Length: 274
Length: 263
Figure 1 (tube, rainbow over the protein chains, first blue to last red):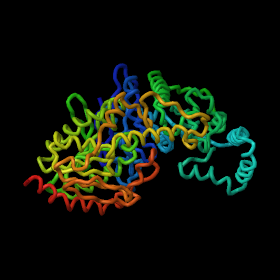
Figure 2 (figure 1 turned 180 degrees about the vertical axis):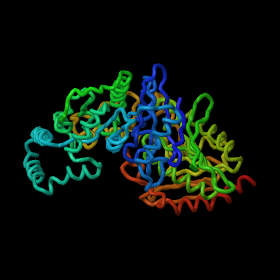
Figure 3 (figure 1 turned 60 degrees about the vertical axis):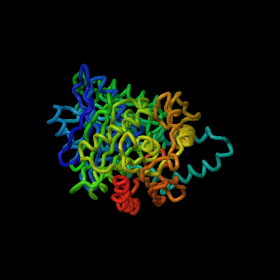
Figure 4 (figure 1 turned 30 degrees about the vertical axis):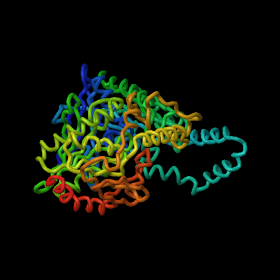
């Protein structure tokens, strides 16, 4: 049964305790963009209740400028840190999985770098490096179009090769507060070497930067085959999981991944990035 | 924290609500009956800020989620327009219990307008505010179906999907609704002249209001009214754009209610 937990000085959140055989982590969901703590199409509520049945505690709350969260200007990192402190104190959480959709994935990534209590990161449509496979996939996608559209597509592709055309990738990186690709690979390796597990899901809704599953090789580099990293790519899904059937699928994979925290962390590296 | 979040019971249904206590002595109560489906998510912060604004003016305000919506218990398909009427009455009683027995305004937002309209008597309301109201349940269901179909075949939403996404039997704009949802909601309308209560209707600039014997009409600028056409939350609805309308509603509040209370 859901409980209200006050985050002193910041606001409040909704805690859904796991039932039955509990998993020793608390999933903390961050706001997907401007959507309040229920998530797009109420999917965070669905996640909380699905995972609770699997024994996982879940906490949802509103960051500054979102839902019932505080006004702009309140530092996000301080609020998240206080939320975790509160969960430690109020319900005895010791380890956390942090994540969410889109900007929530980006925030979770940054927070996980510095907080040793984070045992896992769940990213839905987080960072992916475009790289060569994105360009190849884009050409293949264009070639599947009717012949009469080719001249226009060729012109757009050529325009994309000019310096001003490259700014689209840079724009996304700035809007999404992404690290440089090399920094992201180093951060992945650092997290995995600390025993932090990563679940990175991608949908077709982010086709502006993700079109081919092989991009994940460039995105995660040496860590791509690490036992602590799990990735999925669903081209037929949209970015906010409008279809309930798509949401069910995400709930199942996320639930199975969270349940694996019952077994000890893989502290031995499967790969040594160095 | 000024706002007070809590759970309460509507018969056997556990609901979530947030009370915004009045600053100083309360002069009235407003129960916000939220929009449904995607519109609930789309407008959440706007109405949270509005509740703060009302509370600052001496009006205690309760926002709550129907069973099967928002943070209340129940799956999406657990929401029923008929049961929502009972949820409104229970939420009104909870607001009075927590904030005192002051004159009560039922604020029906979008699809909650016909629900608030029909729940006014059991909730013992003294006035109605209908915010961007859905007045014809049947037409609203049809518009949702059109929006749903458009979203499923939208290449911007599904850029890598050649065919539209198939819908489940009772799925509507991304939510699993109950088998009876469309029929129940289609039967709900706001009827002109159908209440003895004073009614303030707030519409966008291009909408004709429903006529009431004791009514007032307020017009929002496009910037505060155009969110109703959006499935996803991509921009903020600014409370400042609705400020003149809010001031007018607050000015009309004591007089409108006193007429009924004294009458």
